[in-house]
Length: 550
Image 1: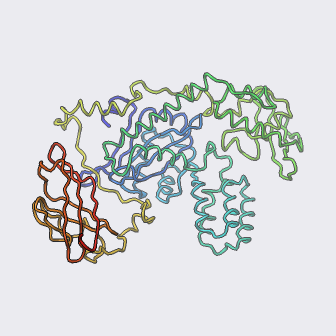
Image 2: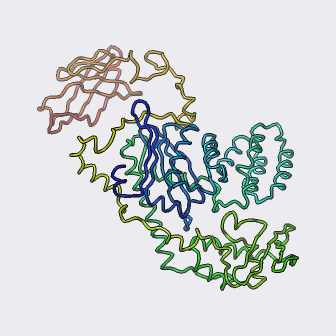
């Protein structure tokens, strides 16, 4: 971290230690993340993941989306636990690192500790639960495919709040879910997950935490459960560098290529292609094409001069959308009842229907969201001090700086390794939460006691010492050259263990041993080869069990 801070003047890092001097919580972000947040930090998504380090610390990432709709990283943190106090600390650290600029909207998975921390520190932000998690929970807590589909529609349906209340009551009554406690709890939290309560609040087209999941998967390709703490940052930097190189490629593509214009509103389409990035242009063009399905139903002038109300309807549909058109030669304004522009920053097909009717050929500035434009990339540049190979720089600095390791005053206090964290995650084998795992409920077969295995059992016989004849198993024997143990593996197979080194004279000739047992006569054929250091390797063990010796 000291190296990154010396190379990046905007680098920020904050950490906590416990009473024993061990690292507890740590948050960090670089100067590039700060620049990206200043341009695209209106919507914040953060989530935690597990199995990225040896100490079991949850990895929390703060992400968003840029003008290419690509995921950008605003900061990272490793936490000791997932309590309200810990999330409050990490959010305070994040806000301090971005100089107090709070996001407009926040997306999380619905964790209670996250929710309380956001409520205390970002009360003005619109906090929405991940739509994917809500849909999954509906499938787990509601029986019947029809009932599940009926409730899942409310997650994304573009309804008014009044229509939501009416339709919800009808759906609950139809599927007899009045007594379902989980459904009642879901309804009580409707203002945190239903799209009807977020219309008009900007989320940039995002309603899930899948961007966090995506970056988690990228990090896990570089890290795992055995990654030590000093390896986390260099390995994460590899993934982050690839993400940022992709942004450079997107910018290059936008500058040096032009999209194909093929819509029925070509003049307007050409103007749009010069304003927005290629990815956003494709989305807007989709709305232009969707406009073909709508027709003008009514045109009502307002009492106020300069305003006209249009009612747009879809073919063979009774539903209508109201578009308020404010006439202005310089900058006309459009407001649609669907509120797609206010929510996603993308003009809707209803507005394009009015623009076609009124013969508007220039895309109005009112409908330009600056975060989606080509010029949004010019608001920041990658600091030259950061470079593109931070992981290599850290490795070189570690080797070159070994001579300074004795100077503790130069590096500050030395932190001890953190303890293994207790998280809320699921154990991959048992599928149970960490706090619920107290033992597998099985007894170890040798001693008949629960809670341990062969490695941790105090009564398990210790391995034989080198040169001693094993008497712990009935199949042990001494052939006169070295001590061997034959352990039955099931069926007719046996495993042979050599306890002492063999003579160098036996490097080439195979060893053939025969032994007889009162219970199972054996013919043993053991092929042993020795390397140049006189150590041995067992290549093939072939044991043939016979009831009689020929």
